[in-house]
Image 1 (tube, one colour):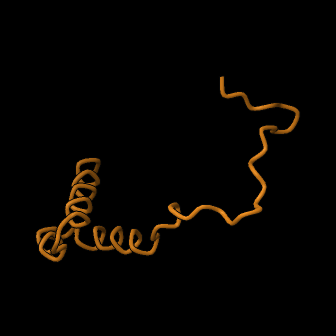
Image 2 (cartoon, rainbow, N blue to C red):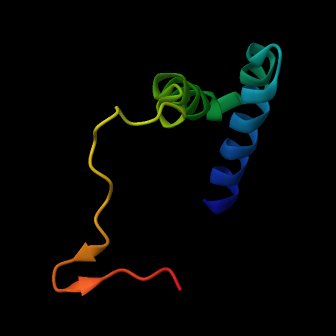
Length: 72
């Protein structure tokens, strides 16, 4: 099972970086539906992390309940 998941991940990464992902999908065989779902999810995700939060949003608190978060 782990080997199968590893293969799906490998095919996904190859398809993601390929100029023609269709060729990689054709080579995926019975793993194709899983690889396609990963590619679709990746496309839907977009670049939402690249966009900064709107101006005026509060900064994250350094307190969690009665505790303070330290970065030391």
